[in-house]
Length: 246
Ligand SMILES: Nc1ncnc2c1ncn2[C@@H]1O[C@H](COP(=O)(O)OP(=O)(O)OP(=O)(O)O)[C@@H](O)[C@H]1O
Ligand SMILES: [Mg+2]
Image 1 (cartoon, rainbow, N blue to C red):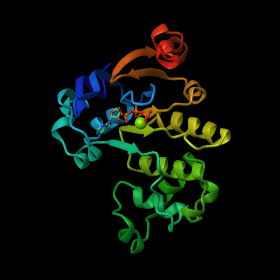
Image 2: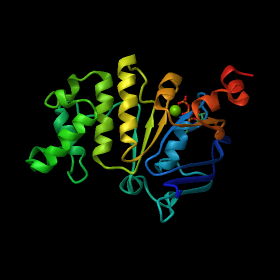
Image 3: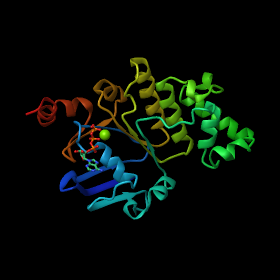
Image 4: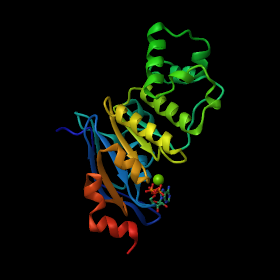
């Protein structure tokens, strides 16, 4: 299978400390992948590299069927090429409705001012309603985003990412601070999202990762320690050593 993203032999040091050490990782189109690993394993730095925020010292990061190098592209070029990222803290516009937040995020609309003077076409309005349904916020569509719960804001932000029709979505610790019911909803949402684009989820909560039911990559000291099903990686003695501490 042709990969959507192929990271090969990537290393990056911060003040002499190797945060990413000869990392190789690939993901196929519309694949769901969980990335786990102890604190400081390099999970967030990996996302920083793919999105262009951090440039590695060596290695290659290739994208799409034409194997374009993401290392030669700026953060905004990478975003336009179809890599979306969700940060841990939601960044929704709190004084705007769920509808307007999603509308603003649609691929062709232009940001808050554009939306103020813009009457959505019925096609766009339809897309927004579909997205709201997809993230489980159909019933909240006219509410101000600032009134949503923490979990609902996270879903809205995932919806805003989906509105941009990414080909790859990187999601860092989406379930942090969520109630068990919210976590479950988030699992469903990410599984559904993976039907239309590749999704890489970093998460510490093992039950959450298990429910995703996808291939798992374990990072440790900036490299891949193990990869496979959750049962496979959690029974790997090296992984057990890392989690229990040697
Ligand atoms: N900009 C930076 N400058 C210096 N050191 C950094 C920088 N970014 C990351 N690091 C270091 O690189 C290592 C990997 O960090 P990273 O944030 O990628 O880990 P992580 O796997 O996301 O951990 P966590 O589970 O705690 O979020 C850590 O030791 C961190 O302190
Ligand atoms: Mg992190």
